[in-house]
Length: 333
Image 1 (cartoon, rainbow, N blue to C red):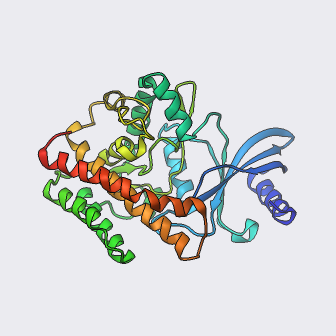
Image 2: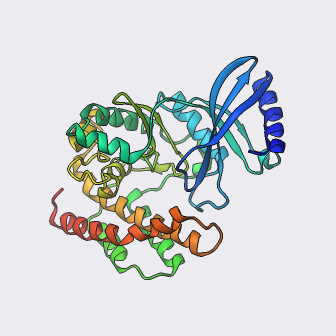
């Protein structure tokens, strides 16, 4: 962070906090292909605090919410008792650091997916952590429309499953690259429709890697930029999809623990019979996102090794999709 931006940020934060704020060390945190997260050590009114500043990368996905909208979601989740970092301040003025941003309190723990998966595998699974994940997800889903503070999410879909298929087909068509296996997966969802449920707030990226963990407990649910109204089982399916198990295929809930423990933590609102549909939907959605990430790199808009490599997981996802389609059509989990 250059000195000009540091000075502008100091001034803005001091006004927002109502007390002098001075930034000490500032370090870009790892991860974040879509957003940047900066760890900043500050003094506020003479007291030392640890914050995280979240802002945009040079290019973002069109489906990603703005930082102002993500901040509103974080406030709603915090108020609902979801374990999230305390939201502190939000700035829409691009003149401060060059892009909108918000600031939240830093929490302890690690979110590095491969480390969490490796630790869970060594222990034969972490049922306690997965039950905690289920409880956090249920708290998120306690937030339901209408919500004036979340009006930017728009009207909830009448049928989340039908809307999912429509949206994915639209994105595939816009990309222009033939993806017959993805189309086959979407057709399988159409052959196996689910009765719609009342919509709730879905995190839409609740997975290992977006969960800060310490001592077998979640200390923060991170990265809310894809949140939307939908079927709660979309979140359950996303966490349980094979692509988010990080090699621990037998630990169905995010490579961390058994699916049953997740459902136990979530409570009676979870219907296991809906998960095959939404786990297949998760594989399809991640494949579409991976293709979009690769396109960002190839377009030259934002060159990056992580973006380029993400597109190379599509064949593996297609194998998952073929297996999932077979299971869904056979009516098996």
